[in-house]
Image (cartoon, rainbow, N blue to C red; front, side, top):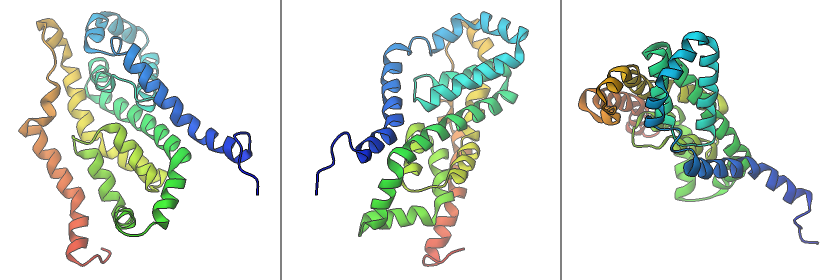
Amino acid sequence: MTNMTNDSPEAKSSFARLLPLVLIGLAAVMGAIYLKDYLSFDALRDNREALIAFRDANYLATVLVFMAAYVVIVAFSLPGATIATLTGGFLFATFPGALFNVTGATIGATLIFLAARWGLGERLGAKLEASDGKIKAIKDGINDNQWSMLFLIRLVPAVPFFVANLLPAFVGVSLQRFVVSTFLGIIPGAVVYTSVGAGLGEVFASGETPNLGIIFEPHILLPILGLCALAALPIVIKALRGGKSI
C-alpha cells in the first residue's frame, strides 16, 4: 500500500478544509498587530463628527457598512468588537443599534462556526463519538443539554466570544441551534454595551472614557446571572430525575 503524499486527493482535501481556519488565524494575528490603533476608542472619538455627518447624509449606507464591518471583525476575530458595539449605540442609539450589533455579531459568529465545523468539527466530533470514558461522557452530556449549554456559554460574561463560537462546532451542534442560541444569548450583553455607546456623546464632551466594566456591576450582573440560572435549570432538573428526559 502506498503512502499518502502531499499531492494526493486526501491531502489536498484536508488542506482545503483547514484553509478557512488558517486564514482566520492569520487575519486575527495581523489584525492584532496592525488594526488595534484603528479599531479603538480613541479612533472613534477622533472621527465621531465625520461618522455622524456620514450617517445623517447616508443612513441606510451607514447601517450596511457598519454591519458588514461588524461581521468581518467577528468572523476574523479582529480586535475591536467591543468598540464596534459602542459605535452601534453611538450612531444608532440603543435601538435599533442593539439589533444591528446582535445581527452583525451573529452572522460573523456563524461564519467562524461554519469554518471550524468544516475544517475540524466533523472529524473531531467523530473521534469524540468513537472514544470511551470521560471524554465520551462529556460529549454526551453536552448533547443531552445542548440548548442549556449553548445559552450558558453566551450568557456567562467570563466566556470569551471566540471560544463560544468554536466549541459548538467541535461537538456537533447543528447550525440552526447555534444561530438561534447565539442571537438570543448575546442580546443582554449587547444591549448593555449598546446603551453605553448611546451615551458616548456626553462622555466625549467631558473628556472621559466609557465604563466598560459596567456589565460586572451588581445591577447588571445579577439579572444576567439570573438568566444563566434559568438556562441551567433544565440540566439541574434532569440531574435530579436521574438523567431522564424532561
